[in-house]
Image (cartoon, rainbow, N blue to C red; front, side):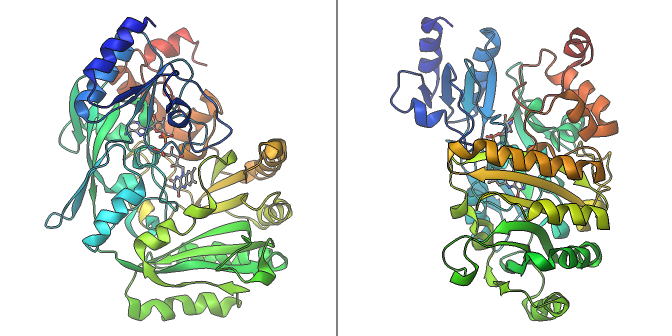
Length: 466
Ligand SMILES: Cc1cc2nc3c(=O)[nH]c(=O)nc-3n(C[C@H](O)[C@H](O)[C@H](O)COP(=O)(O)OP(=O)(O)OC[C@H]3O[C@@H](n4cnc5c(N)ncnc54)[C@H](O)[C@@H]3O)c2cc1C
């Protein structure tokens, strides 16, 4: 890449262009997963839509590999690339609530904490994930599974419109009325189709939640899992709970006698009427008294940020995921076997409910295909120490291999690392061919390929349909 060209790009941007010789370069190229160490040729920290258009045109005209970054949380580090140009949206953080319409217009570089902070002031919320530092961009475009899924659906089920810069540098809006094919594809199809500069979300009247973890000893894990698999399918949509194997962090609010102890638990979030909270939790507490019960009333953003301090940027992360329809007794036995061998304090296994309101949308209505399952399962080996990389990777792979035969086939794209084209196809199932058609129309030369890539028709043919 000729330096003269980059000088031209730099002069055209209202935001910064960060290059390897700049002081901020090593900070700007870092993503959340400390295992990822990529060195882009330049990072365009865009200030507005015009900057995004300029950067997209520049990458295309100069044949540069292009990555797009929002929160930088992606498992496989898809918000950064080697040798190419990174469009970093983290400077675009405006959030505007329309209280009458009950919507929020959210710029493409926001984290969920940015969104919750503003919507909460209006007594409203939209579905996100379970950690508030995650980017709105990546989480939404892959689907968006979190505490509000059973009540309000996935993040994409609340996405009313998206403003986008396409591969040819043009600006469009995708919604139910404009560019409907694009609107269908971005709801689960990831960053394959362009840069979303702004999202329009539907808001819900959610302000205070009754939420927090309940933990039980590992010896009771099989019994808890068997109870949970029945409960969470039948439970009212006001209550969400994801099952976890975890190690209790050594600090408050956890009592000292449980510190560093491997346990199982369910992290609950109840969004119904406060008067009915005790009644709703009664059958849960009645099933088996937890060793620790931290459920209580709190502002919604507090619940969203509860686990943020546990997962600061820069830890080593190794991810493996699957969708799961049924949790058989055999699968539960395997979960208990491998979940009990959890190797480090930050490592965990979660089963996130894919039921309740998520089932109100059909499996072909958006690109997100696995609407007919019950859980999204994720196993993550996590540790601050790079020397433990092999340890956390081996545990994750062994656990995944044992449970994969009991899964539905594909995995949630946002919980996948680089697992190849067959896995992507398995994840989109009969939505895959339609995604290829939309990709071919909007990005025929695959400019946006640093993602769980849907290859356009020409590239598919050249690669022999790999
Ligand atoms: C600690 C942690 C907790 C998580 N919890 C959840 C959870 O509860 N629920 C859940 O569903 N997922 C969760 N995830 C997974 C998360 O959804 C993915 O990692 C997601 O890719 C992160 O989005 P991001 O914007 O932060 O990532 P980035 O790394 O910035 O981007 C990820 C991908 O999205 C594309 N992209 C991002 N923004 C845009 C945009 N505006 N326009 C076009 N393309 C864009 C990028 O090009 C890239 O391919 C979690 C991840 C972590 C690390």
